[in-house]
Length: 284
Ligand code: PLP
Image 1 (cartoon, helix red, strand yellow):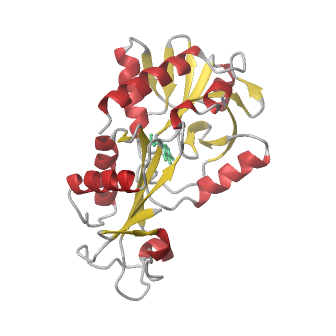
Image 2 (image 1 turned 135 degrees about the vertical axis):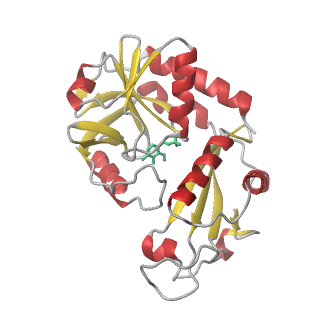
């Protein structure tokens, strides 16, 4: 596989980063995941805009203009012959010197890494037909979940807890309400109303969430942006999650309790179709 490291396209085995890099010793960096369908980038502009916001929020300098990220992503897709899959991009603060809590100056060269993962048939994921089972766990992450940092240990622990119980993912609960999934935004459906937590520092502002809510409103569905409890989820007609890699994924049970009929719902299926259609049309 050919990967990107600081301006160069090199074999993955030759990509080397300093052990003093703050991304390595302090999780001091941000990332994005962009899906590729039919060799094209899904919602590049949304992901690029969020990358810039994450960098700004952490006062990490931005090493290149938006157009260079786009060109680089396309180059990686071409060099690795990706039809369906994803691009992972990470920008860390770098670090020229010793480990120190204080940041180095903003013009310190950042470390930019990107690579592709091939996932043939990504949009036809059979899981969309069966749906995911989720469990709930306390949300014990830090307080700025709107910044897409590489500090992912707690979500990994939550994912492991889900797997240990034979589930697919964990929904995180804070003050009695669900914030989001380990790596996706969480929704329930009641009648014709889609309910998902409002934007704040408590959740990641999903790029897929923004697109799906826009498309839902355009399709005359009602959207309520508010928190909901696990009990409300158990009483819901449907549930689903969204993310750049899962698109719209139905959720069929929560903590072992069936949601609705315990099978993927119509609203989730329709949104998945509308979303994929629109994204394929606007892919770059
Ligand atoms: N919430 C969290 C915590 C995430 O990690 C992710 C994606 O990785 C999302 C939500 C979904 O965001 P997006 O739709 O931009 O992929």
